[in-house]
Length: 94
Image (cartoon, rainbow, N blue to C red; front, top):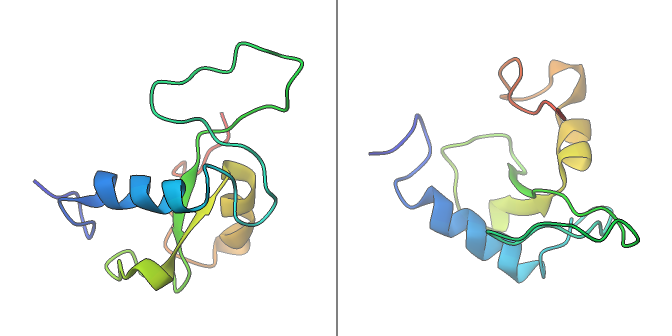
């Protein structure tokens, strides 16, 4: 079952976008956690749970060239000032 405008294969599609970015934010380069991975070594840069952003802010447009891997901070920066399709709390950093 799909959720809203996202396709049924969204999880697989998002994972492939994250893999193609080598599990790093495409904007700032922060490392991302792979599925099931934890970041127990606090001496290394903090790893983030990566997110996939739609460049045109249309969640029904899931063409690969419209998707980019971002850390939560960079993703939120693209949606600041309520420009885009973000519902309250969707991109909370907590």
